[in-house]
Image (tube, rainbow over all chains, first blue to last red; front, side, top):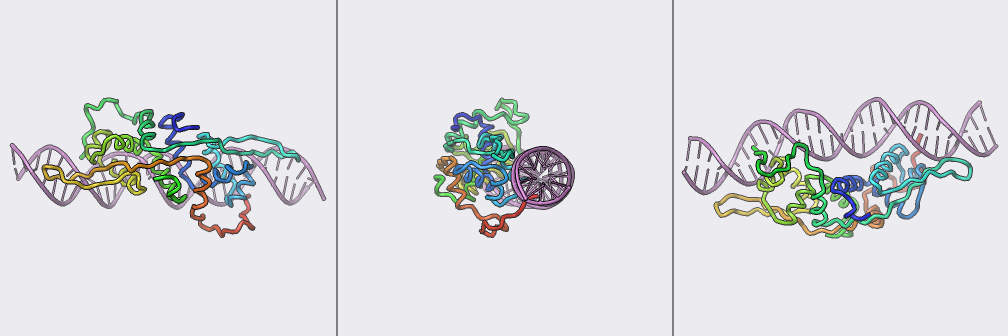
Length: 118
Length: 118
DNA sequence: GCCACCCGCTAATGTTTGTTGGCATGTGCA
DNA sequence: TGCACATGCCAACAAACATTAGCGGGTGGC
């Protein structure tokens, strides 16, 4: 996944998702070794409920992928792994992303009469 | 500014700051032309109060810089411009950043006894 | 004096996010 | 049957964020 593949709004979502210490740690751990939820929670020292929330957000923006597998003893294990991504974040990339941002609510798309401040 | 120059916590702050449509637009506009607050607010079609909040956050993490200048007719103008930055965001970069993240509150730094869930 | 332009601040709002605790499901094994 | 392990979901709270409205200050020019 490159930065050019994303719309401005998608980029904002991805950045918001990465802007969290827990989720950075999840990416860090998973980038070395795929893992399943409960084990990952133990490794990170956080509760499963909390981890699941973060994993769901990471998955929602495509930064990780999930695979449901059955272990040898028949237990259902949900394995996560990182999706390869490389976002080269520069001012120019932001300018390009801004082009594909959804217009603000109430934006008429015409710059002639801007709202007055004060 | 490269991604290696930042601690994990700083990176999180930078990402959180970029994860906003208004601030992406500010970066986009400023990357083409430095500008002062009131004019920038008109260009973007948002209120000055709102813009100032976002500019302050961008400045706080070093993505933009401010310069106070006097116009020809003696008015104080606060000009902003983007700081050059290039953050190459990859799983490996996240792994490196995670190493320099501040430990969670209550983390004893010992993995022997993890909190039990459920 | 009054108006237009520039700058800043704060209090109050509504919305989103992070986190916890509890409960329900399923498996295999002693 | 009861335990340990795996999964999921939901209600509730606190904290952080985005936004508005209104106040203050300054300059120069008619």
